[in-house]
Image 1 (cartoon, rainbow, N blue to C red):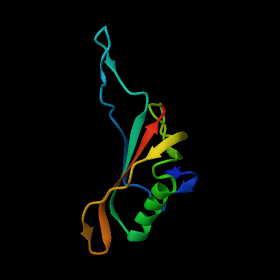
Image 2: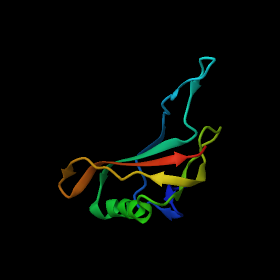
Image 3: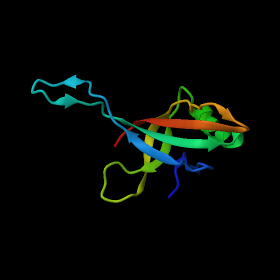
Length: 116
């Protein structure tokens, strides 16, 4: 199943994607770590055309600082590789590295506030 944002398939599927480890917020009274209730998922591309990157920017611009999206991502911590629609997610602004000829390199999109 392909990665999607609000039901729209990402034109150029990411080369890699993965869950970002949560940082501990501290320890409880028994010495157990306390973690935030949400997770983040990172999508990465080595090379991407300007028009493909424009789609990612369009997703971000649509919800920017006020809205949330439904992100179709691999299901967290299951026995099989399957995708799931996570609601109420927030997109961070896509980031890029240097240009290589007419392509963007090191493109990264992070989906935050994912409730697993």
